[in-house]
Length: 298
Image (cartoon, rainbow, N blue to C red):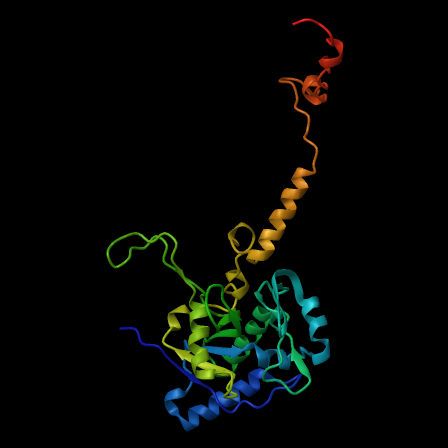
């Protein structure tokens, strides 16, 4: 029977711009292995790293007073916007293709007066980290960069993969049969997000543990050039929830008004490129017969 285990990695200091995350994470993993031999990293382990330390190392800090400006700069489109007593909440699509509140820019677990943007390219960051840690330990590992994201129809937030390297992200069960022999047509388990959520249980937001190890899923570890987490984003016609309900209603209402204000296009006669003159002309005004027949006997 499959067994999965996960644990946090202590000993990672406060990260500042320019820090070498490969060196710092590698050092913390080795120190943990000395203190707890069962936690020594092994081939096939998956490292889960919160995006916050990646952003800090990459210098994505901005002054807190510039947070709204940064949100606007990192927003591709507004999905939904709500005004409430505490201000305005915006759900937006970011430059990274993610849909999340405030473009993922927040001020938790950062020094006072600082807001933190997401990594510019989380998949590239994941590949660099994964490559460095594979080289340091001499065997294959998977790596996920996570951020906390809310979900439609559900209360609260959970961690989700926003960057990934060396890992198969989904388990595509389409074409297989379920336990009762029925064919599966749509099931794709999103392994990367499930790992991200599990790892958050041992990292947490209040414990200063930004890295976790997940063991037992080595069969999903792949080459470094495996597709990254951006491929998990629904786009175009696959995005059934492109706008919030109020925004969708407003856009539909505006489209209907525009259609009403557009003059009808003239019909064309069959087999002709010319408009049908009778159809394109305005109908004649009804003749006022009351005056022309005035006084006539009926």
